[in-house]
Length: 258
Image (cartoon, rainbow, N blue to C red):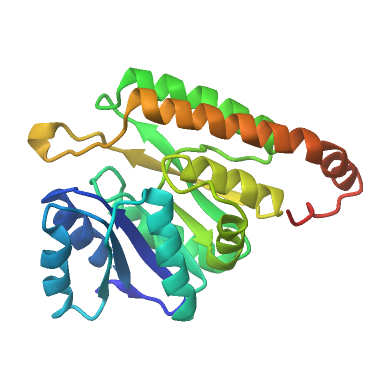
């Protein structure tokens, strides 16, 4: 039987993932209750099919957005609904089968023991990982370490992680960014600025081929430009915050609220 929680839920944003969505949801449901899926304007019929499935599964809830708005926007919608329902934490995972559903309980238990933290997956790559993406994330991780004054974030891009709902909602509602591919990295940087400490847990990542049902909406040009713009913004803010961050670190005070 899957673990059941009134505070922690699994949140899966999905856009045109096809059949892979159903195996991802099934794997998550085998490990945890509840599981929520946000259909981000999908046109492949998966939203309607999953809603029908949810009618016979009280542990599954499906939220459907009318238009595709991006991963961050889908997560924010889920956060708002989860907060209204009384939940305090979400474990976000991708719908494309890359993330290890069998690790959901261990991540959740780590968060339940230390609810003030964010629990971050630290990816373990196998031979399926595109070399260009593996090398590219090292650059993003390097910038993230600088922007957070080496707060200990193991990986800035891996989307298998647990967020405290209230803190992340405040971060996202306070500015217009973090709605698309820039969501994962900016979320951990801004939460670190708020004093939310990371817990890093190793987790495998699997890049599925098209013949295995793998679906990727990553665009090397568009999304790398978006990441570059994001780090430019974050570095500019970091420079402005640096005197206070350093003073508080010397005084061993928690970071200020942005």
